[in-house]
Length: 393
Ligand code: PLP
Image (cartoon, rainbow, N blue to C red):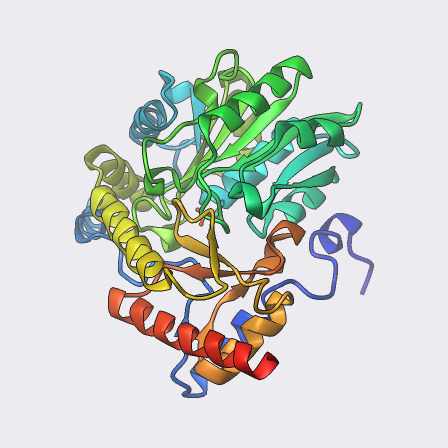
């Protein structure tokens, strides 16, 4: 076979990818073991029925054709409306581009602002695809850790220390995956000030914007930021549509104009009938409130059940679809803890170290299971923790 490009082989360098506990659990579950899966961030429920109906109608209505490269007009109108609501900045359809999921919006954002050899800052803990997305652009990056003891809030001074003359962008994610931290307005203001002073782009991943604990604060709304902020958004989490692959990027219109060329050579637009259903779901907010309420209730159930568990400390966990537990007092090696929990109690969680060093010594629990299963998982975790400690003693 002739050789492959280093661009493609360099996206995921071989070796451990952090998903070992999850895939071990999956294999054992498929073999028939009763394992509670709290290691993945996909809903345990289907897409709202109204959205499904809208898609079926669009299919019967003959929407089977190529679409406009940046998205069908009604979808862009609906996305711009949601961006106005989500970011607090009046947004026109010319400032959004529809993409197949939030991941493709992130890819587009990185491609738009970084040349090969440029440098970026990634605030950690971070979503697992971030490093590969920079590598795919040939860009370098420095990971800046947030501290568990600060509730995983970013520290602008630490970011500033990591900046280099060739730094072009900072990537943040709030509400955060994996920690569930919701970045405070003060933290975002400090990062925004840095972006303005150093003339940097801010890539702001806000795919969990409906799942925060209070009003969503987007850095795009801060003074002087709309012209330098690219917001990654998605219908996967907010609208219960992970498998539909619909997301979008909000950015200055000159950025969007250039990104239409990227769609020309990559996706060539989105699926026609899915686009129509997505536009209706955005306009009518199908499922949004119910999904947000469901995750908020589950977070409370889980946090209540964990309260008082000796030596387990909750960090972050204010929004998104995850709860982050500091288990360092019991076992500093979070992967060892996660494998032992899987073996002893058949509960699969993600070791925090899979998301960068900042979350080492933690485990991430996803809220994507019904209430009763979450409660059962905590009962098992409680039993495991007390036995682990007594064995270690
Ligand atoms: N950004 C974050 C922080 C995520 O957690 C995810 C998915 O889990 C994505 C982006 C990608 O979203 P999508 O499923 O729409 O591609």
